[in-house]
Length: 459
Image (cartoon, rainbow, N blue to C red; front, top):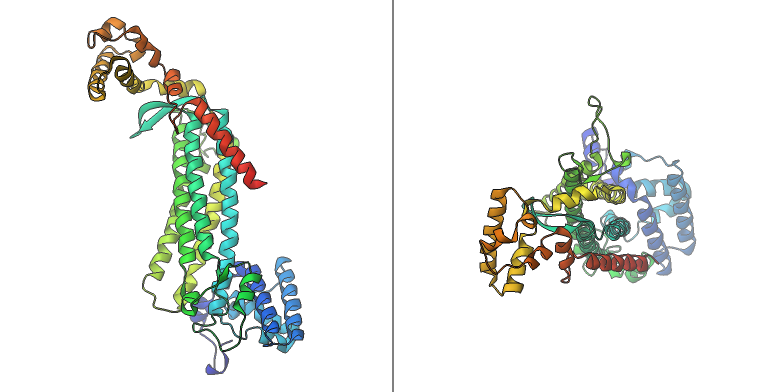
């Protein structure tokens, strides 16, 4: 394939390290689409004949059918998807097949193919994230008034609602989708026609091939076109952040499903048992989502390290731009689907959640706020008084709302019995009506707003 410069083939080790067909075969649809666009443009520009272009298109369609039917023989000796397709094309149509590579290189060819593949993958990930958001918003609407403990430092802080908690992940997923959309906008330029690195002397119409492949425009610099892998890095960065968000919820599911908390249950669909302990129900799906985050972040780090010292233009190092990202993005796709399924499957124990929400003097902030509103005490002073009240309740081993008015007045004489109106967890969450707050009416409104938005996007 390298022509007359070489008189013998590579050694077996060279062939092993050099071949990429084991993973870049996944680019076959994109490679064939780009080749068809290139051939059509060559014919329009009079660089090849219309008859040759017709033969090439027919041959490429045949190869596509062969691959999709599992009848195509991939050959490692031909290194990559490009030469496998071109080799088979020449077998099918003869000399015309050798004209396809006019005015292009494998450098701009692989850059084009991988951008097309990445664009398709991003679109699929964005759609999967929308389904995940729908699952979260539906569960949030169902449990808009279900009280649960809100934590900071993994300590009970204030009561919130389960619906409010889930909507936080809807917002995270929205930012994730935005990052993927931004990456897609920047990757949607065509390298095709940049050739090896310097462009070509043939009178190409790069705008024509860009349009045919759905790109916004051709890339403006041939060196950049063949050497840029920002589009992979950006997509992996978005994937890494997305995976972190999924992992955070996965970790919470692991904690919530533990008998130590027992706040939620997962069905048999998303749990496994033990080979030795018959009683076990393990949240393995959540744990595996959590673990796949490492693979995704690792893929981003690996490619950053590959690219960090490469001079312009193309170098064979860039062959490492596909296998890791393909694996990482497949892992992310599976993780999103698993999380969407688990969210729909989650069944909260509402009684346990509500009981846990009241532990740890979770309504202390409500008490401090009442002192500010009712007694016009500065918040810092109210904070100090509340701390003393909590300490006294803890000393007696009772909850704040179980303290007597007399006991409270020992610390602050001006407290009235109206204070008890703010000390239950239900009243606490209902009072958090500020924009973005956990009040059930807020949660219902936000959940419905997201469901309408997602429905509109789908239609």
